[in-house]
Each structure stands twice: as C-alpha cells, then as structure tokens.
Image 1 (tube, helix red, strand yellow):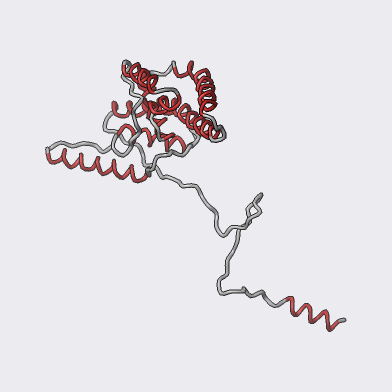
Image 2 (cartoon, one colour; image 1 turned 30 degrees about the horizontal axis):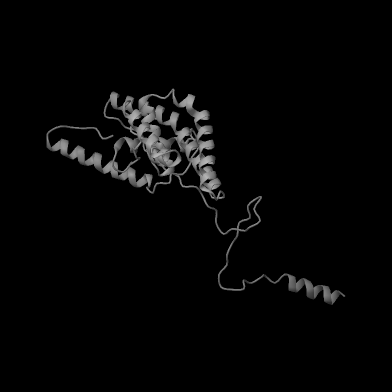
Length: 234
C-alpha cells in the first residue's frame, strides 16, 4: 500500500503538459458559463478641451448643447417605437390589418408625445428632425408618408416650413458643421452618462469626423494668415 501511495504521489506531482504547442489562458466571468480568452471593452473616446474663437461662439455651442440634450430622448424613443412597429408588422399578414394596427400605434404616439412636442421651439424642432434621421436613417417626411399618407406628409412639411422647419432634413455631420457639433455634444453626453447611448443607424466614425473638421479649421487658419489675419482654432 505504501509503495502504491508513493507511486501515486510521484505521478500526481508531474506537471501537466499542454496537448499542443500553444498555451492559452482563459478568463471566467461571474455569471457567465463561457470561458473567454479576452475581455471585450467598450469603445472609448478621448475628448479634447473645447476651444472657442470668442464668447458668442461659446454661447452658441452651449445653447445648441442644451437643445440637443433636450430633444434627443424623443428621437431615441421614436426609433424604439419604429423598431417595435416593424417587428409587429412582420407577424401581420393582411394589409388591411397592418394599416389598422399602424393607425393605432400612430394615435398612441401622438397622444403620448404631442403635448411635449408642442412646447419645442423652432430650432429644437429642427434638431429633433435631424436626430430622428440619425436614429432611424429615414427623414421625418418619409416616416409620415410611410405610416400615414403622402398627402398628409406634404401638408405636414408645408406647415412646418411656415415655421422654418423642414421635416425632409437629414443628419450629415461630415458636411454640415452644426451637425458635427450635435454629434460632438451627443458623444460627450454619452461618455458622462448625461444621455443614454443608442447607436446611430448611419455609418460614420466620430474620430474621423473630428479629424475632418480639425483639418478644415487648420486650412481656414492658414488662409486667414495669408491675408494677414489671425484666427483662433476652434
């Protein structure tokens, strides 16, 4: 028995050798039954300090920030409602039943948000239109046209134009500087948890956008220097 025990202990002390030439360490996460070789981390942006050419420029940015943070939750909710609607319509076969269901959802949304949306200013309404496009990839005009009718969409757009609002407006942060500022405001608000992040359906990269507008600012500065003027970079 002693010989057998000593032999067993001798065998148990032999270090385990890997079955192949690659040794891999795994991480066990609490509450997860799957072992992972790495931990996935969320993408993190390092934001530069905000710089403004003058006080008025700074004031305009913070006014835009206040309005963007105010209306973004409505755009986010609109995107969620649209996804829920499309998911439900998949299971409805008859077009007549689809139209009836769509009208019920549209009526519910109007009753849920109409009073709050009436309190928006003109500029807040235009920002909301842009953010709806950012979250859905569809203009507010096309959403109304799809969910209600082309005739109603036409009158909605005509009425909105009386208040200098276009419901056909898209969100283009790569070519419109104000749209880039809105995106910058959103990314900073997501980072400090002022707003709950909802991925945009549009394909663009914030870091690339920042480089584009930084290069544009540098080119403007060079042009101004050639003219004998000096401009502080934003």
